[in-house]
Length: 106
Image (cartoon, rainbow, N blue to C red; front, top):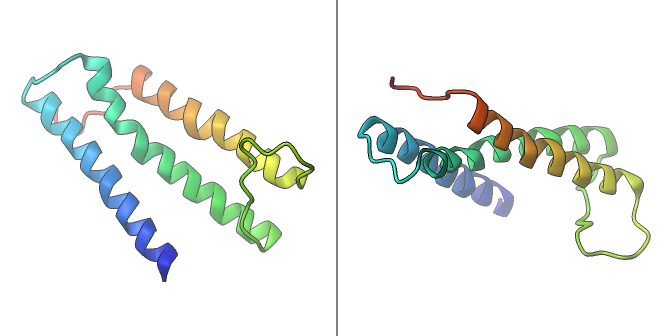
């Protein structure tokens, strides 16, 4: 129940940022185009994270453990999950947002 609440809260926040970006671009209120476009990244990152989480739980039947700043032996699956998320879930949205025009209203 607690996880469901946080999922919807974060999803609503990410969608609000995405829609704010659309509004700012449609109204030509560009502080800088790159700064405005970067407001789209949380939604893309969140969706990638949820996809990774569903796959991880399906394969290993448990939640991944946090490997950030942990200097002890950890299961390799958790380290691999974190590494893939940082490469695809953080680097991917940066590439997508700054190289592809994602505007809904043109």
